[in-house]
Length: 292
Image 1 (cartoon, rainbow, N blue to C red):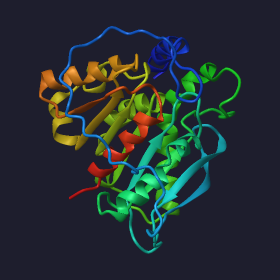
Image 2: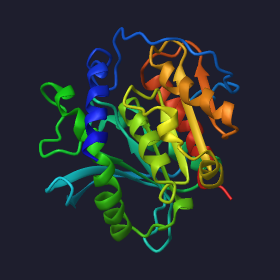
Image 3: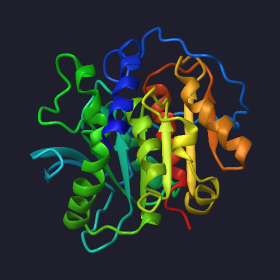
Image 4: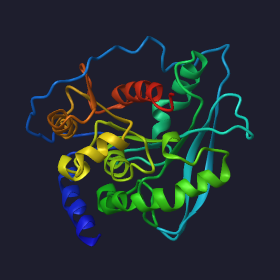
């Protein structure tokens, strides 16, 4: 375990030169990988705009006790329109970038995107949990956000051991892998790939949006190809074609294609490292999860 955390910490040094303010990337350059992208389909106009005349979900902040960190931590939760406490729901855990916290995803209006998709019958009713992926005592995105890089690796244990049990105790949600998904942007995209593929007994659906250099090597993410083929239901990624971090997603896509592992990678045309790409990612990913 210590060796793994040390490796991630070393990887974090490369992030120092790459990531700017919440989720943003600087001029970090990575080698280009030739890969076959999956078809890009433009999202419809207004997919991220609040619509009148449809039911709307709600947002709330919850607090949970973290045995991993030893503190009480916060998460933002989206409850779908006409939420019914007597009804069971699936859960999407949606992770932020290195400069963000449990409220960063609100810039991407996930509540609006899901309200519209649910109203159109394009997505299942679901709860979205947006946690703070920085598992350390002071988890605020302040000062040198890169100094707490190891805390993002530690979040694997906070997520699995503390947050998921809390959510399943507070809300009437399903407790099986087919009703859990994890996805994230930038650092959170790397976390989602690292944690989701390492815990396929917990998550059936894994998404990475513009995943950062904390993303493990493909051979580490998928050490057992046949197991991944059998247990992972969805491995879905998107990255802008002007984003210097395309390397991380393309590297995994190339590995999957070479080993027959189902994997999607969308190249967003003109896309940079920003919420234009990440909102598109959520819009598409949400339509693919929790379906029969």
